[in-house]
Length: 399
Image (cartoon, rainbow, N blue to C red; front, side, top):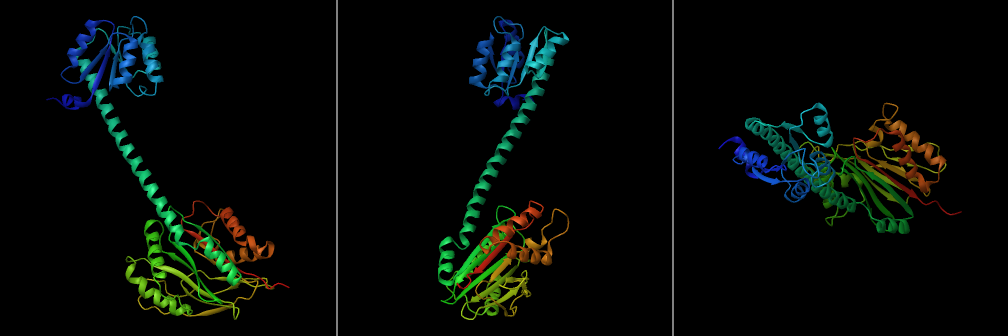
């Protein structure tokens, strides 16, 4: 069995000619290699092409009724037949005849009287190209289906990840019980992100606020946020001592993280009874506290070993004032390390300046939105890391 015969098992050639003898000759030439169909006029050819979808059409030009050029044009104009290759088999051999045929949509010409070996070679070459095209289309369709499936699964994962973050009910409870207005912006650099933030109502005077940033981004980093969320919601006490909290969390998280992965984290307790923010950092960007009556933000310390890097790491408690009217800004390192349109990076100094300007220029209720708008306007997009900013505003005392 020849290579052509092996390929012919699923390939069909439609022969169109108003001379039955020509159809018989072409069928005899090709019958051992491909399945053949035939039509003796243009209208029949169009019907067969739409119903049988042959792999290739050998089409006579000069036929009674609709000629070959018009048949070819109609084939190319119809969605179901536009991709079927057409080879003209014709006695017309002038240059303008070929030009008209190619303009109508043909891919090749075979001139009558034809040579059987030439017919076989032309058909073989084009059917091989068609087979390769069909394989490529099949692979493309498979890749598209895979892409759509992955996109759907990533969307589900992203929606699930969003559900890990504080919802509107918790934010409303915090607002009503603690006079704290909490707003956040979370924008992963890909479908999934490695940033995480959370709140916890500790007692009638205190809430805990945290922000974490896992190394990397995408699926692996997102899986780590699920691990963290599970640890934080297993029924254990969050704790009022941030340093102890980070120490305990580090020891629990370290065995769960893949080698080489870690997280930076801020954990703070806002205590309204003494107007203080007590916090500890694990290599986190410096927290910023904006105080009423002060021009510049207070810059906290975020030093400490990242979570998951070393076993039994120790952390240090720090304090900042947090009276009524104060605001706390927490953020991931994408804020200070993303590229700026004008070159360079914002760095901590640039972000502190931006926060101070916004705090004095606009109402605190829209502080976060203003910061995000100005950051996005200045950054090169797309960002290469996840961007998270959390803003906690304490309601001022009423006069």
